[in-house]
Image 1: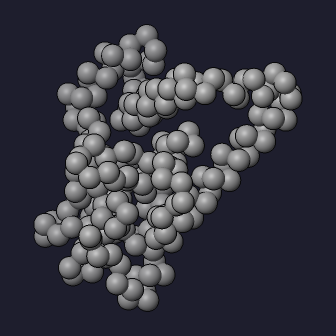
Image 2 (image 1 turned 30 degrees about the vertical axis):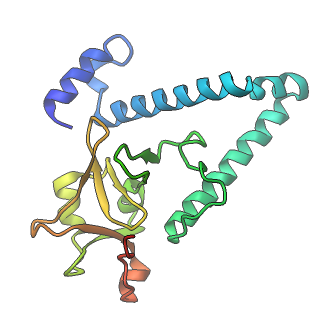
Image 3 (image 1 turned 60 degrees about the horizontal axis):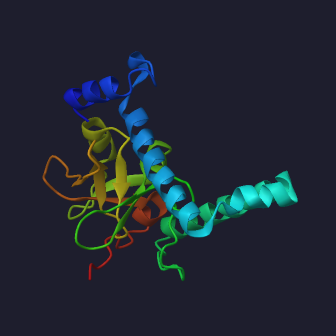
Length: 197
């Protein structure tokens, strides 16, 4: 996010968030909240407000059970993605649908989703590798792009999310594409780039 983008968002969020604490993360969260609100409104229009009806009829335990279901689905989606499995039986199953901001819909011609990897890189669960040389360039990429907006596609290629929700391929100083991989797979010499169809 450029300084100009940040200045714009500080003006837009004036009165909602104090200007001195508006950061790129705050802007990204606002965008995700708007997307979630839009999805909730559409679902309520299609199906009615089942959550409130369930709580009214069955009490707070209904709400806790639904939150448990959502959390359980998120855990499985995250584990499946981390292990490279991304073939759910339910086509529209996504972390975004579960109220989580980690899945970012791709707006290009091919339907695709991107998984937020910032926390996994920050906590040293994933490293960032040059596609061809297979050199670990995690520190270089963090210095150039930061953690906050890193995401990957289903093939492991790393992107940086811009302020206008565009996925920009992350490249090293040698202009190589970057792939996210676990330490274990890297140390085992696993071929980490999946074949694109």
